[in-house]
Image 1 (tube, rainbow, N blue to C red):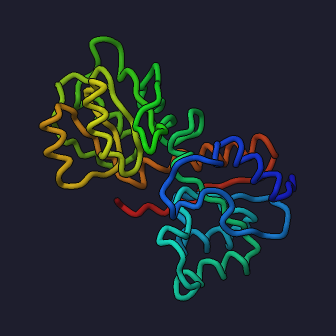
Image 2 (cartoon, rainbow, N blue to C red; image 1 turned 120 degrees about the vertical axis):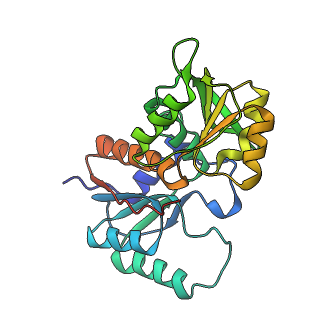
Length: 257
């Protein structure tokens, strides 16, 4: 089994994912969040740095936990209660924690949106979904001209995601061009309308987005926040495995949302 120093892996991830200087929410804290001393032989990938995920990484004797949602979303807080349990378990298990949020959503190769778009058959991808001047998603052709029926795209999503997809109607019955922004990307409806997209694929929405979809003329497909954001950490872990020869696994703990 290969053994690679943690700084080498962190340097690779920081560069490959474009972490430095990437805009994000303050609590995202992209990059290495918890350090560990030893070399990395085993990596667990997961969507969330939850207690159950950390326990799984410890049980698998992982050296690094790679996640999309880290442990500092609510900013500077005392390390007590569940925060202490998480950090304490990582330190006790000798497990480093690396978290990457919007840079992973946006990445052209291993990003959540790009991988999901390709799996849905979306082609001719272009950047889409601006956040503080940087795109976090992708858009493209849903299928050959003139496009595919709304019901067919919903069925594709259900097959790819392995679960139900909810549709907020608004656009035409045939989808020619679609945008993909995973997680909570319904806020991109205005941009989707401005770019004349017929549909927007994302994870979750708020009440007003159903009205926005109808009034803006863009159909929204909701596949679940968790289900649309498993792709990036899986693909990044595979990249680490292929590049460094280390073992990887995906810890799957759906929230149902």
